[in-house]
Length: 262
Ligand code: ADP
Ligand code: MG
Image (cartoon, rainbow, N blue to C red; front, side):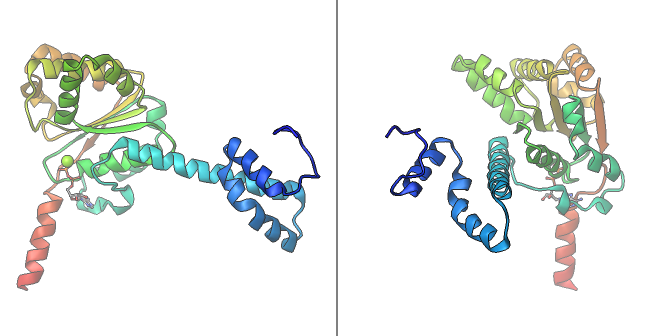
C-alpha cells in the first residue's frame, strides 16, 4: 500500500495516523485525538465537533508557541509586563495612553513612541511591557540598547554583513531602542543609528527611551544636522511619554531601609 492511500482496513491505524499527522505537522492533534475521542464519546459530541475541537487545540498551541518564539527573539532584558507597573508612582505618565498603546494599533499604523525621563522612572519597564504586548499579538519585536545596537552595527560592518543586519532590523514590526543618551556615540555610530531609524520611517514602529530632553540629543549624535534629521523622522508620528518622577528604584530601596530601621 502506498503511504497516502486511504484505507479503513489497516492493521494498526494508529501507527500510520501518527506518521501522517507528523508529516502534516499537527502534533497537538496527534497528542490529543485519543483522549478527545473518549471525552467526545462520553459527552455525546458528534464527529464534526470532535474534529473542530482538535483543530482548535492545534491552533491554540501553535499560537502559544509563536508568541513564545517572538518573546525569545525580542531579547528583552527582563520580561516585565504592564500588569506589574504601578502607574500611581508616576503621575506625569498618561496611564490611559499607555494602555491604549498596549493594544498595539500604533504598530499597525507605524507610529513611534519616545519615553523621556530621568533614570529609574520605569522607561525600560514600560517599553518592555509594550513590546511584550506586541509579541502577544504575534508581531516581530526587537529590544536593544542604543549602545548595544551601535556595537552590533559596527561589528556587522567590520564583518561585511551590515546589509544583512539592516535587513533583519527593517523586518521588525517594532524596534525598541533603550537608553539613548547614556553614552555619546562616535560619528560613524551615530550615522549608522540614524540609518536604522531612517529606514524604519513609515515602515515600522520604533520606541526610543532617553534620559535626555530633545534639546540635548545633539550631545549624543554629535551633529546638529543629523540630530535634526533624526528627530524630524522619529517625531513625525509620535506618542511622547513624559516620565518625570523620583527614581522608583531609589524609592523602593529607601522604603526597604526605612522598614528595617523602624
Ligand atoms: P528606567 O529605564 O527609567 O531607568 P526601569 O524601567 O529600569 O527605569 O525601572 C527601574 C526598576 O524599577 C525596574 O525594576 C522596574 O521594574 C521598576 N519600576 C520602575 N517604575 C515602576 C513602577 N511605576 N511600577 C513598578 N515597577 C517600577
Ligand atoms: Mg532603563
